[in-house]
Image (cartoon, rainbow, N blue to C red; front, side):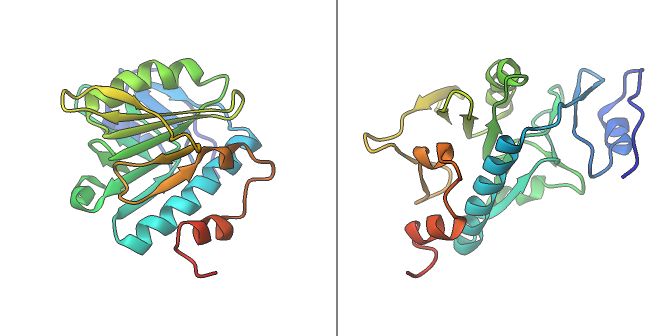
Length: 204
């Protein structure tokens, strides 16, 4: 993997995409390249777990595509190019997918919060994803053991959606998909095959 020299001048988004390679962890904000901090092992394990479960569910039901970082998403012409931890693009919106970025909002975005990213994920990105048209936004905070789920309402605003009394969250964007929030805090995380069995994707 080649080491990229971070540009000191402002770039257009097209220049930024040319500068990146498939291993680059960076975002484009107002022409500046923001290099992201390497993720912790816990962050990576939760990302891998959620990506595996969601990808299996989406493939089984032919709903669209699940992608994980590093992959760019640019929700609008005047908005930054971000690199969500996980994104889902519904089948009817697959035309937004380009060779190396998503040109428009994902239907679902998941950010796994770290101490370094907490303000960005809950502040700048929250506002950008809301403005850019993301339909559902999950914020998973392993350190605080908190999971917040936001759904876009008819006015284009994110509204907090609660898990049910049993601690189960049911997605609006992924029909029939549900998640036991406590799965995310288990150490080790539950086996993916066991979760897929509970979701009815694998026979007992």
